[in-house]
Image 1 (cartoon, rainbow, N blue to C red):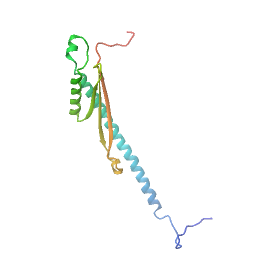
Image 2: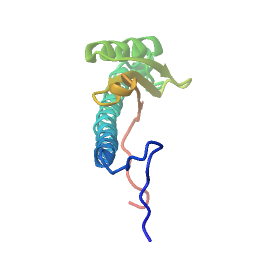
Image 3: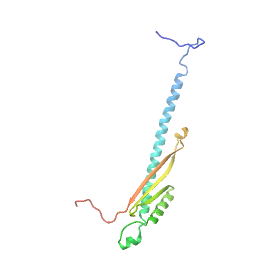
Image 4: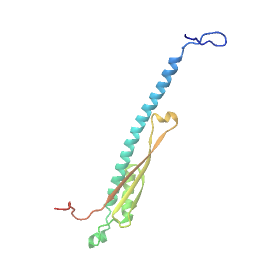
Length: 150
C-alpha cells in the first residue's frame, strides 16, 4: 500500500524541486573537491619551490669560507657572519624571506624559508592563502671521500 503525503490544506506534496536540490548539493561538493585538489597542488608546488630556494641559499652561504682558517690549513669552516649575509642575499634575490643559522662548528648552514600560497578555489570559503615552509641545509665537506672497502 502506498501513501501520498498531503499538506494541511489537503494539497499533495510532490517531488517538484527535489532533483534541483540534489544537483545543487552535488555541484557544491564537486567544486569543493576540485578546489582542494587545485589549491593543494598549488601548495605542493610552492613548498617544492621554497625547499629549492632554501637549499640554494644554504649552498650560497656555504661558499663564505673563513679564509684565515682555510689558508692556514687549520679547518675548512665558514665565517658565520659572511655565510648568513650570503644566504640572506640569495633569499632577497629570489624574492623569499627566511632565517639562516650556522652550526657551532661552522660546517653546517641551515635555511628556513617561509611564505604563503594564494588560493583560487578555497578563497570562496574564506581561505585566501595557505602557509608554506621550506628547509635546506648545506654541510661543508673537505677532502676526497670514498665508500669503505676500496
